[in-house]
Amino acid sequence: MTLYALKPRFQALLRPGVASLARAGITANQVTLTTCLVSVALGAMLALDPRPVLFLLLPAWMLLRMALNAVDGMLAREFGQQSRLGGYLNELTDVIADSALFLPFALIAPFAPGWVFGVVLLAVLSEYAGALGPMMGGARRYDGPLGKSDRAFVFGALGLWLGLAGSLPAWIAWLMPVLCLLLAWTIVNRVRAGLR
Image (tube, rainbow, N blue to C red; front, side, top):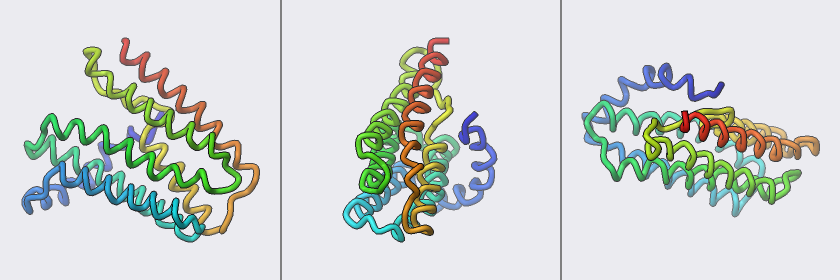
C-alpha cells in the first residue's frame, strides 16, 4: 500500500484547474521547474535558518507540491505536452526537490545526520529503480511501501510537529533508520515488479 493509490481521485479534483492552466498557456515543464526551484529555495532556507517555526512551511508546501506534481503530469498527458525533455525533468527534479526538502532534518535533534543522508540516498535510488522499469520493457514503477507521496507525508508531518512543538522527542531518532529500511524494501519491490 502507498498513498500513490489515491492519485486518480486527487487528479479528478484538480482537473478543472488544470484545464484553466492549459488555456492560460501554462506548460507542464514550467510547472515542473517552478516546483523544483521553490523546493530547493525552501530547503536552503531551512538549512540556513533551522528555527522550528519555519518548518511549519514544510507540510503546506508538501501538500501543494503533490498537487503540482499531479498538475504537470496531467498537463503533459491530457493536453498534448508530453516530451522527452519533460520526461527527464520530471524524474530529475523530483529527486532534487526531495533531497533539498529532507536534508535540513540533518540539523534537527535528535536525528543523526548520517541517517538523514541515508534516507536521501535511498530515496534517490528508489526513484531510479522505478524509472528503470521502461528500460526493462515494463512500466514506470511506483511500488511502496515508501514512495514519493508517502515520504512527503512523513516529512510534512515531521515539519508540522517540529513547528508546533518547538522540538522533537528523543525517541523519534529511530524514525530515520526505519525509513531507510522501508526505502530498501521499496527498492526491492520495484525491482521485483519490474522483472515480472
